[in-house]
Image (tube, rainbow, N blue to C red; front, top):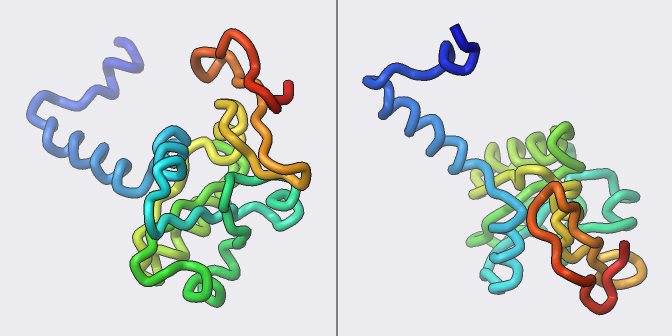
Length: 157
């Protein structure tokens, strides 16, 4: 029997399966949703870069605040407004720093989601990154979606 088919839920399990996916959506978001919210200027959105400070300084999502999971308990109230919504991210899919920071925010009662794919997926999609040189975009990785015909002004390859 196929390994994929073997793992399929039974027809009567549809509610439980849907609930599991709903639970994942309640705690995760993706780079496209975060980019859209940033572009729309969603009020109270706080982006937390949970990588080491040196990495944040090298490049981060526009407006992201550096904060390691270990400092969430002491720094969250100073950074996140009472009505704020937190999105955390780490390096990429194999990094759990965004998960650890999100857990700490959740323990403090903040509405929080972790951005799937982290900084890596953000950069690979060609989304804007704040660096010491200003706001830059990388040329999108063709493995992540359509690539424009030519780079926009100021883009780097």
